[in-house]
Length: 117
Image: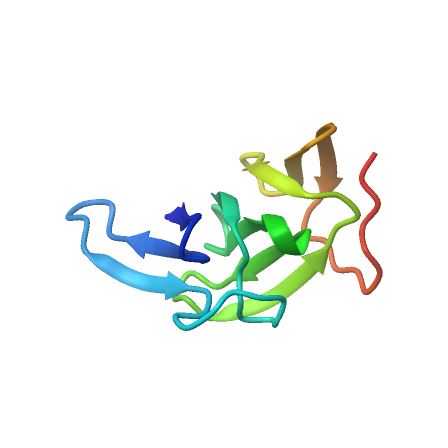
């Protein structure tokens, strides 16, 4: 899985043969809508669920997708996410922002933006 910075999408490819499996994000435009990405930079995969978590940088949120390419949810953040890392058991998510690294319990659901220090 890799983010496509300039085209506002992320791509899922088969690790064995490199074949394209899914395109995440709108194929027509970037933006703040639930299925859109705007300058995605970081990506990680939850090893137990297969969920794909994308640092949707210009929308200041995490965008979560299923392993088969279906949008699941967005989680708003108070700062701009850049890179992501999930611990092995999938309970803690490290988010690098412009001001440092923050660690959150995962999974996380919030209607208000998650404050990052």
